[in-house]
Length: 337
Image 1 (cartoon, rainbow, N blue to C red):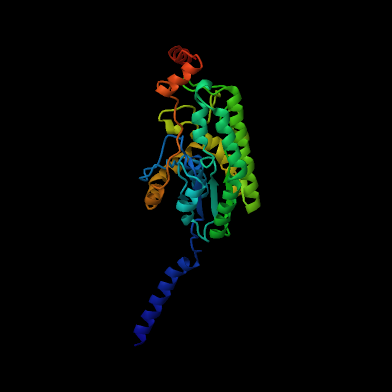
Image 2 (tube, helix red, strand yellow):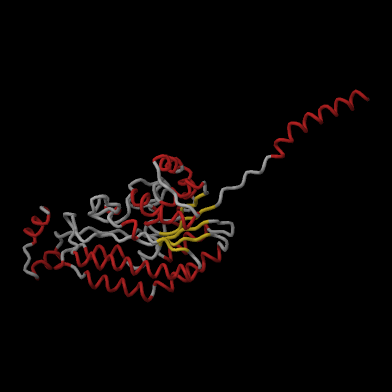
């Protein structure tokens, strides 16, 4: 009996010795949750490399949400989707938010204002388009209708995630005053007005963000010198496939968006290195698996895509005749630019 008790005591002591270090170790905390909401400027359209999630959202590991999440060790739910409007974010993306969400970023509003349609109109020759009319319509919408939509959306975000740090991302100026693409015809005046429209949109986004208690990340300054047709452009001009057109490249997310958004979202700037890009890319399969669970919801979002000018249509030829334009000579001359 005594021998049994002694053996039990020895075994108990040995077990305690093995378990004590484990019990003394702190529990590993779950990674903070980061939900990225919004449209193509957050999903990464334009980076030319997308996760295989069974959608047309064009989500990229080279986009700023993935880069920031990887750098900080956040658990990313990458809901941003190309083509998304305020209504799309509300109907298909907000369900990802919970009271436990720690970080939220969002870019939305450009598709509501019909910016792809405006670019499509303005890319045509002056005799075939009403660029000023399209810009005027977009600016009127941004001034009168969009602010109310943003206020409602931002209130919903705060209601679902009351403790989250929320950053609203703006839009860069796309143009530098020249058009170097052979088959678009943006004039310097049109490019100036289009940039002014981006500034107007940013001002309304910033105001709504401030009213909601959110931070606003303005990408205007970082993209100066990196617009379409600059020697070091961070934004695609007319591209193939056309969906890439007039969206930030991978360099735009690395050098433009990430340094502006990361300090506001996380408290410190993220520097994008080759190692970070590789680590972010390695997370692509995991991101894709999560987003496939939302594929039915994402299918409701209609892509908003720039349409390249086509001067071979009967409508274009009629417009040319009305203005006394020899369209074949006009096209040939334009291709030599």
